[in-house]
Each structure stands twice: as structure tokens, then as C-alpha cells.
Length: 79
Image (tube, rainbow, N blue to C red):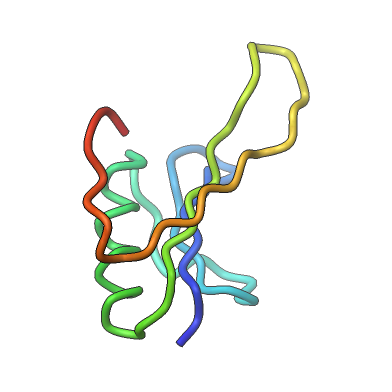
């Protein structure tokens, strides 16, 4: 299956996109919700969950940091 990407949505909130897809599979208001959806899809498709985390201070343009997480990994802490 396709790896699932969690990233910020251009119009606000967060989105889940399958690798290579032009459209979001799901759009949520929080990163935590998006991770939950992406994790379930990744488990069902035997693929990986990839979380793109925005970095840097306000006003700075810094590339997104990509974190590869296997869907079996338990993510703890604030999302």
C-alpha cells in the first residue's frame, strides 16, 4: 500500500495524503486526529506513517522536517 503522509493543510488544519496522491484522504483540525486516521490506513495497507512537522520561528521559511514512523509505534506526547 501507499505510505500515509500527515502534513499541514494549505487552508489550515492538517491533512492525510497517500503517497503520490494529489488530494487529501482526510482533513482534520488537529495533527493528533490526522495521525490517528493515517495510522489506521497505514496498518490496513501495511505501509508507513510519515509525519511532516513544521519547524522554525514565525516568519522563517524552513523546510518541513519529515519523521518516518512505523504504524505499530505508539506516539506519545503532545501532537
